[in-house]
Image 1 (cartoon, rainbow, N blue to C red):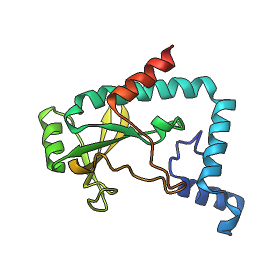
Image 2 (spheres, one colour; image 1 turned 60 degrees about the horizontal axis):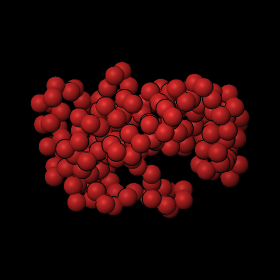
Image 3 (tube, rainbow, N blue to C red; image 1 turned 45 degrees about the horizontal axis):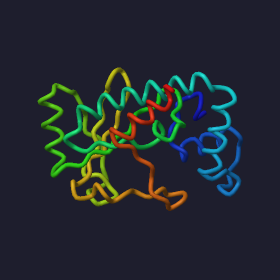
Image 4 (tube, helix red, strand yellow; image 1 turned 90 degrees about the vertical axis):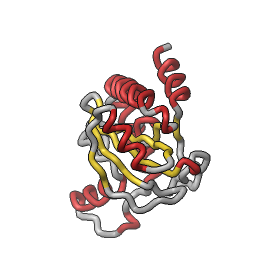
Length: 180
C-alpha cells in the first residue's frame, strides 16, 4: 500500500493492513523499522527504475523550491530525502524564520499560493506553522520553525537518532551523485 497507493503514514498503513487481514492485536503488526525495510526491498525489486526516476524528479523539484526559499535556510526532510517516497509522495521542507508570518509574506510576495495546515505549537521540535502548497504539480508541506532552532535536529521516533535533513548544497551534491 505504501509503495503502490501512495500511503505515507506508517500508522495509517498498519491500521489499514490490519483491517484487511482481520488482525486485531497491535503486537502482531510490524514496527515502523520493519515496514521501512520491507518497503525498501519491495521498491528495489519491483520499482527500481521507476523509484530512481521518481526520487530524482522529486529531489529536483525540491531543490528548485529550496533555492527560492533560501532566505529561510531550507532543509529537505522525510521520505523524498530518505529514498522511500512512493507514488503521489509529497516533499517535506523545514524552514527557519523569526516568525511564520515572514514566510507567509515571502510566499505572497512571490505569488506562491499556499494554505495553512494544523501545527501543534512552536518548540524546537514542533513547527510554529505548517504550510501546504503545490510546486511543479507536486504537493509540498513546509514546516516553519523558530530561527534559533536551526541547529536542533528532530529525533526519529523509532530510533531516537537525529532525523536526516539536507541543505541546498547537500541536495545538489546528492543529485550530482545520482547523475554520475
